[in-house]
Image (tube, rainbow over all chains, first blue to last red; front, side, top):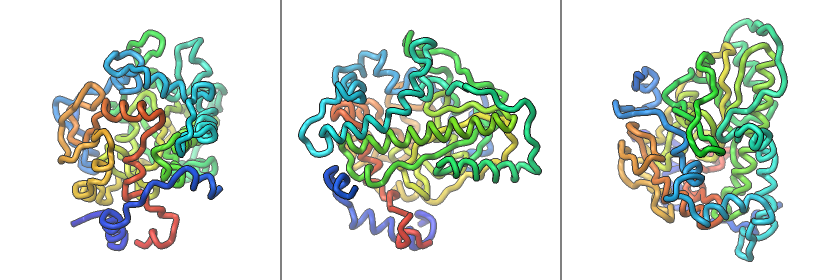
Length: 34
Length: 354
């Protein structure tokens, strides 16, 4: 199936959907990083 | 009007005979100004909250005073330019009306060696000004609003774009990834505000540059035309399940602007890189959407209300559910943008392979 662009990007996007649902970064974290 | 065009084969747009141009008055933000079904105390408070005295800061993470302080500051420049002729001439520029040209350009057009040369020069200028993306498409009346919205009368008024400007330059300004990751919060609205502000500055500067070269150019942001189909035709990317534009470079985090011009330029080729096929199987935005405003089904021609485009086969968002939710939380929602897998940070080498 044609997904997104090249093979590695396709794999990474698919892995992202399966495993890497990232939690929301809090605003506190955003401010602390700056 | 001929609803089908040869470019549809490249973009994948599927228009039926029922298609009709969209009246901006039916857009959900405009409806919040005249339609009792959409108007609410919370919607009013949401709009008023973009000014500090009515920001309703609270202790919750992301909704404190400094979060609103930043969010509202990022809108400031856009607001100033938007309101220059708002009271006097019923022009909300950048949103309901095109931007006014405040300076005259050069009387004779600069002669470039070729269209390719002109395009290269324009791209270089746009990059210098801070544009994230630039593409060019042919003027397409299908995506022009049938009318624009008058804030004063709450009625429709005719467009002021001249139809003899044959090309549209589309500009894309990326939204900050870190700020978007704090969605839902008032702070995350800073990504939107900054996107608009950068967009406004680049649009006005580039438009003046084109006029100074001796060509005609009109700067437009959310007004006058649907930006997403024009961006797709200008080679930015494809439309995703959340009805937003997805680009290879910035995923769905992009604010769009357009310049209508007669400058001779090379027309960009639409780009398809598998978004449709990916969104077919990925349900992340529709699963994450709290009011379930994003469809889980296949693309269809179903329009939920007057705020949806008629006769186009696509994933359609339930605008009323979407707007009610974000007005209710007193800040932009953008959860669908945050959870989209295309948000991978492609500036990192590990994500850029291939």
